[in-house]
Image (cartoon, rainbow, N blue to C red; front, side, top):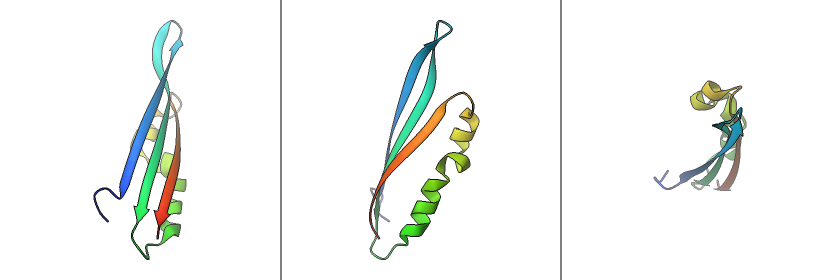
Length: 75
């Protein structure tokens, strides 16, 4: 895959909790361009387990809500 075949944009939301600004949410949006013939099922399966398998998301579990979305083209 080309270096620009996978792109992610992340956005964090900070809120005031107990008079302190804290990070409460992170949303990651993936843009993925698959090469011709690439198995789309594997990409879908990897995305479906994103939060459970992501070390950062697991570290933030319970403190920061992590969500994601994706646009996948090709395959």
